[in-house]
Length: 489
Image (cartoon, rainbow, N blue to C red; front, top):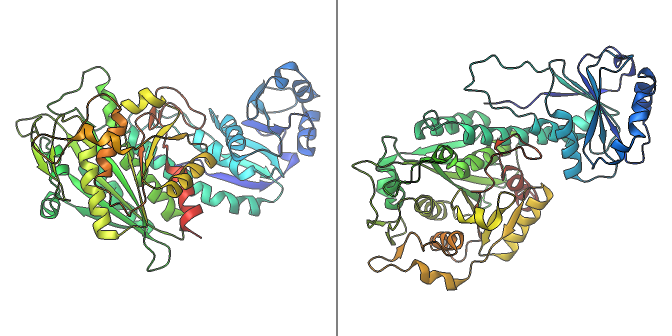
């Protein structure tokens, strides 16, 4: 997998500044006050840094933004990046500054003069996240990128604060890699194998094959994948870091490794993006990796349904009726509304086996949520106000956009079927809401539940604050924060 940059924390060494050949980054507050290391650097640069800080260009910068001084006289560095950042800033501003510093890491590496900035660890986290680059399928030799060193007043303290963030960055990178991977590489078999490899981190991983799923009665999930040569699977990942008898938080992810739409085939234009239709499963995997790496003191189980939705002589047809593990019958109106069929069975299995304290499902479920919220916010649906509020608070703290949507019972009538208990789509009106209402049917009323529709946030066509264009890893940070705040005491 793509590995985050290994960031070293060292005591400030002013004598090393003149000879450093990579990029030097400095933090300057809006008032323009220069810290001792920055004053030393300014003297070496013959006052050029101070002139930059006093300029109208610096005054116009927003917190976390920067201006570059290229090849300054008196230094070996290729550039000094002057980043505007006050000492009293929040997590989002600190990470934005880190992302500014990390963008385009040069061959000579990066040296950050962070001194005693209280948000140095968060700056390092932002740097690591924005430094991501998925190059697995490019034949050209990768551009060499040098090491990253942060000079701080107390390296041991900052390193200790940064360690769990480094684990979180690895979880985000794991999710991004999975979502960016083409589907001829990330088959259901390959996906399951990558998850099984996390046993070496201390996760308990179990793979349920098609025969196992048939015995459990997962007719809804198996119907989706019956037209594909790739076998359908459910992978269960357990992290038992909390009290032995504490009920776990369950995370459930949609893992459609490629979605043609099946017999209700999608238009050709844009279908190549359907390699990301396993984004929910990818996020669950990334969260589980982060929890294991940082040894979270909580019990969490991640379950992902892995299928491929293909048209063939064996494929599910519009008008078919399938029976879910719960026992409900479902009329398949549109085979492109397949993710909810996968989640229905995995949600029920999670509740029957683990009796979770709460359950969160994630899925690139509907194009309708993009129409409603665009690409800035994930749609949030829930049957429990307290649980939902805790998640929204966690998402806000981590800077991941999320917006609660309605889940009124009045929408149920749109899913009534003439020949079965329920149909799998209610048509175009309120498409993301009726999808959530479908899933709610497979959640026991007493179980706190959140559904996250990440169709608009899992993969972007342009750069975001903390990621290059492509997979974002949305949700890994928010869910990790939810675990910290609600389940780790």
